[in-house]
Length: 192
Image 1 (cartoon, helix red, strand yellow):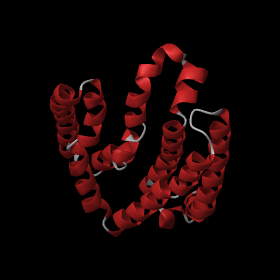
Image 2 (image 1 turned 45 degrees about the vertical axis):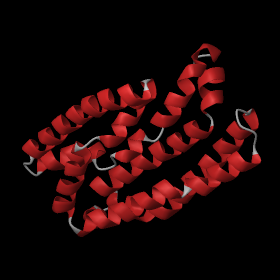
Image 3 (image 1 turned 120 degrees about the vertical axis):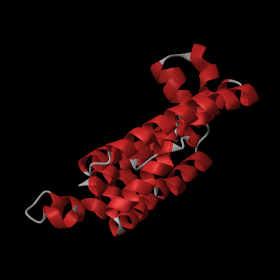
């Protein structure tokens, strides 16, 4: 269940990250909040991929708690907070506002959480890692192609990005439908 849940969440977050990164100007300035927020575009581009830096934490805290490792989960949360504040201060001093946007990429508790999940899941951890690499890398050439073919900050790029997101989502469904089906049928224990 952990592997399937993590893949599901990260597949959606990955598509959203690529989509937003390659279409930040249109989404932020023309659809959501207006041109007065143009200064936020570089910061948002930095933040687009932050959710992908801690794939094991979405449901990992729940896994640790069910295994009686509440203390490890709490240590990971505290390490993340301390590193966010510490790196946030250091990077903000060095890079200005954008420094704080880079700080979430350096959360130290995520490494502890990944290590504990690996200890609990064993070989399944490596299957999950392989699946996450597939999820993360599949959309990259599609979005790079769109960026190369379509002008930046254009509605054409936005539309093409919707199309490649749907293509990537369809490939995800094709790739992961068997484990999902197995999980939601009587063979669910095997897929988890």
